[in-house]
Length: 250
Image (cartoon, rainbow, N blue to C red):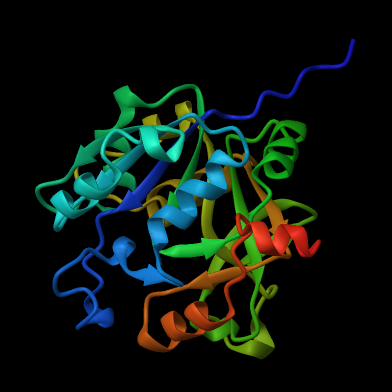
């Protein structure tokens, strides 16, 4: 009997960043609410998840939380149920997870709310299940490895991340895209208070042989600098665009 692969119907989105490098765009709105082609970055992310069957989203908020709540509300008009987990002070990518633990189910997607991508979450989940992974990271191929943490791989198993290596010594050119599938048990490996999944969780999972990669070969646009933001605004092809789908581009 073939095992049924159940896609997570829940996602956790990090949306508490200050976006200091994007000022003045982020003086009055939080970083994930900056517009790309007339739509908040966070809305692009939510639309991508909904396309793959996600029904419930927890948004981890920080600065200017009210701007996010006012726009998205309970999520009804976006086809999803939205809950908020607010941080009065920054808890890091890991601390935010620990704080929201009671809101999260057995398996869930996790995203950085300031990236644009057209990741096939259904395909990513299939890869996660086939490897019995505790965590799967969507990796993206980059040209400038010295700007990223890149993965050392054995097949699809992640052995470690090497932070900003020289081109000639880089173990690969596959970088963390900021999109994950996590089993809830992974949260128990994080300490209370401030922590980072990149430093406090992923290395520990790699040592256990439980950290795997999904190679994403489509679009990916970080927006953490003015230059990257401008590139995203110009080049992003919205997968939800009816016109693009009509043309057969998506």
